[in-house]
Length: 291
Image (cartoon, rainbow, N blue to C red):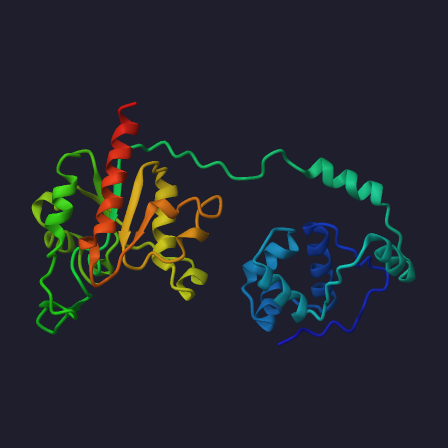
């Protein structure tokens, strides 16, 4: 629901030439409405955190920014600088563009990208169960018995992964399976053949995807990416039938595409193309560790 902002302050300069200036306009509008952050955010339909970030001059998703502006009855105009001068002068304001550009130049940093130290070189394989080590997805009945909706055997493709990993004893496994949501970790691991179980060093249990990624179906991709960056993993590969939109993850668009193998849930790692990807990755990381 839009917030009423009828009490306009004619002395306020409406020109926002950077995020802090825009944030100040939003905050001033909220204060004129005599609302605290929580009440204003609830009325607009965003979180208090989003509104606070905007008011503090921090970046948020574009759609959320426009939702806040619309909620406060504000509009954004994009026009040539000369026209902006005319508009601001009509409102009794002037803009010193030299000062504006100078302030932006002082604030600009040579490199604003966060630096992530990817220094953990141990080869790490993120492994799902359903649609990866067997065809189809698991169902647990009231007796605790696990069957697959495909009618196929559990872990029928596990021997393929065992064979591919055998020459590479250093490879570790992190489990990403949804079984972790309903079973204790030790039980989940116990279903694996010993050759794979002894490689398991961790799971993604308890890690939650960010809400927007859950909505668009790429939650598993988000969880794995956050885990890999959080642990500083340099050599990793994810085998999963639900790692969607990998091209949208990473520090640069497309950076992590080669780190994800999106599997056909009816084939899992029995797919020849998927096996080729795994073999190439194993050779590459083995060579990297030996150079």
